[in-house]
Length: 207
Image 1 (cartoon, rainbow, N blue to C red):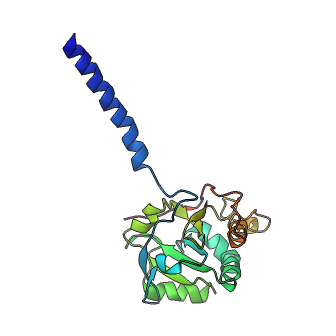
Image 2: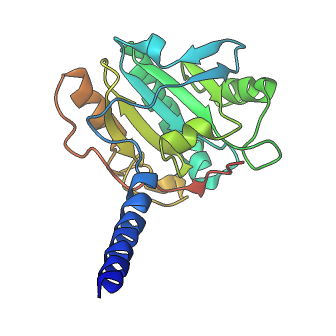
Image 3: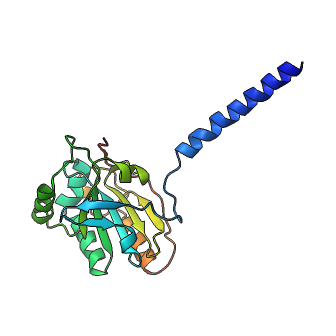
């Protein structure tokens, strides 16, 4: 009887561990918690650190220039417009590329700079994350995947750019933006009303 009790107790303990472990592994960024820190090389040849942006609002934009969902927003001029609105307010806009070498969306620094110029984009910097370490720390899944970080380095918004998960340029007009209201709320020191949405777009091509 004693051995049977020990066996059942051990089995229950094992089952408990088996349930808890996956929840810990699935933990990701959380609204109201410090945004994951990082330092990444930029297309300009410098290293950009999130810690160095303390005191400024930061927007992160995961991108893949070959993704039709990304092209929708750039071809329509929507992404560039939001970038310019944000940077005009002193907000730091960091465009992040987590595509692994040899996969869709991967570019060299020269190619990234050419894209910025030809599309008249206006990010503060384009950053390279070829190992996918930073993208995975943010649980970034799609392009575009957007994040807004407060002046204190706290994550205030993560998710889609808007509520129209299509590749049609015509859907940009009339779409409900999630990023603009998030930026406005953070700039005013207020909580973001819709702080988490489901990102849509192309799956990030991680290594």
